[in-house]
Length: 322
Length: 297
Image (cartoon, rainbow over all chains, first blue to last red; front, top):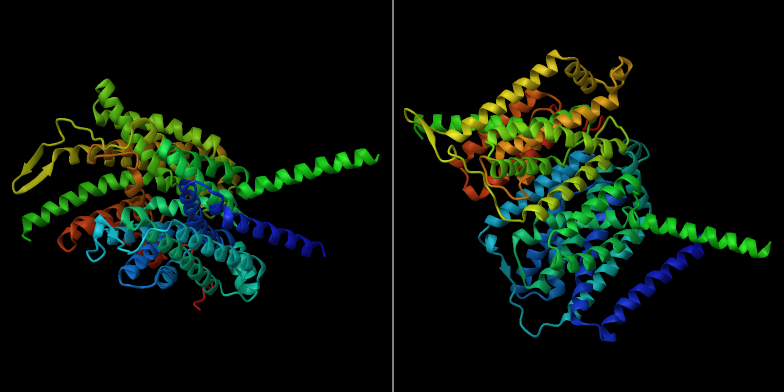
């Protein structure tokens, strides 16, 4: 009974957020704010995706730029080849999913930090290869030639749609049996194997799902930017961004990666203009604080704040009764 | 390729291996005693480079002397970092993600403090040695490489001596083998961990100063060397100094001789691919990370 009401509250909260984001562009917000929100929404897709692997399953990856970049290039080439944008995004997801299997099969034999370090190696190797590959333009990048007018709202709603899908998938995983098996793998792989979860299969599946979503995020971004280059979409800072957002927001929760994505997308874009390096200094310090004091990130702080307010409210209620 | 070319490449690989070994030994000792994968290593390599640059430009101190001076300064900095941050992480026999992410956060902070202070332009240290070279018959050796190789190898020898012959060294080796037995034998684990973290960071700072004489650098300097250090210590089996030296030699040889078969643009990918290959294919070097009963789907 209690649980059901709680679920309904949450559903109402997400619905309201979606509606607000849906009608915001019609309330006369500036085109700059639309652009910022678009960026944040694209980051949210990747952030939610990373959380499935890093937060729920406990496999911290420094290599999500591989999927983001491959998705970006796949969409770019698909659109240039005459594909409908949605077909191109599907292609992005497929390419990234395929890559996730090739990367996951060897690297998932490694545990914890070793897996994390191996993903740094993989993503750097992929970036070097993409910088030298001639048919994608190498280091000078790749341009998308899409005909017709530039419609920011179409991009915005594409990003909103995909991030809503990502959140629904994330919420489903948090509630489902599959999600429980992933959490079991996070807590203890041997114990998970003993109760009938195949850790490698579980990790490969969630990796594939996360890679697909991240690839789509890359594709959506590439179509908007119309120009991509390996140092950008495959850059180490892209991997870092995708890792920082869910951890700052609160890894292993549904809301955390969304909060993290919003904070990162909005704050970063504003800070980068004013202080080019300051935002990473801030995020680094925030990461240290979160690791040392509050593993649940912003979501944890919000939870504590809510507990604090409820206590005060209850105290004042009992005081007025007494 | 004739014999002279081969000897030339061999010599440059050996000289490279010396500096690689000095660069990765700081990571090895920290990993060995504390089981912490020190991602902030890159940040301290970078700071070491700028430390030596500033000493050279402001006080006209020779970069080789500067590198030696970097050791005590970074030793203190490392002990401070351990005292403020690292000791708050729960102790574990296995490397944890919390410690990995903590050190990563520290790296981000150090790197961006570097950007705030020195900007993003590339810097380099020029001395009279930088452009000169020695000739031994058909073999040509850049002087600066030799002058960096010598202190690198000397510092490794000194460390080996300390580890073999002093009480501190024996305590460190005991802790690397078994933390609990070490504690039972009366080793003050916390104090030793702090000192060891300092020594590891001290080596990072000094190695950064040495590397700065060979390559140009920016606040992003340590990035590529961090991954190379990983390759080296993974190849060497993570906890052994001789293993690390052997790993450094392997990486230096592969990097140097790959010039013959790979286009230069792909050069940086070698270390990264070797890293993944070493992690996945060399379970002997990295005992304990493979599950006892790992099943393939």
